[in-house]
Length: 114
Length: 115
Image (cartoon, rainbow over all chains, first blue to last red):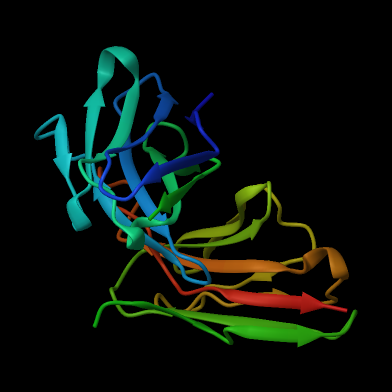
């Protein structure tokens, strides 16, 4: 069965320090992978998507994610956190070979301290 | 501007009073879906539609109805709302789930309170 695991429900960093939000997936095939961000009282906004062209994917607002097939991971990183990065982040998998369904991680709330 | 538009943004209603939340997308997307978001439960799929006149149940369909008469519209209908349907609802669309790397585009959400 397809699943998406976000290993941390809450992450707290200081402004200017690196961010790491972890995501692992289970899939028999290479899935489509996405990261979304949700600010309070807002919808989910696409940060980046894995296109299979490169294992390191660059997204908006300085975020990156690295696809590691051997580890079935797609961790989200940013070199330097900004206060405006405080939000909830979701890892999402599209399992084309499993009823074409989107699977959502449970979310990671990022807190950025001044 | 390419977008998914949901209305209303906020809705307070009483138990049993039928309501409809509208969703429209202007991207010619085939796939549309409804989700509800509750604290501690994440996003759960209610219904989805692969194309016009094709709809199917998601993970939590009880108490909801949908229709897909046109490609752009996918309304969510609560025939007899109950307090346990108080939630934040999101409509989303995608070009097609058959296309690799076709992401979901989300509306801004509808916060529903049923008293």
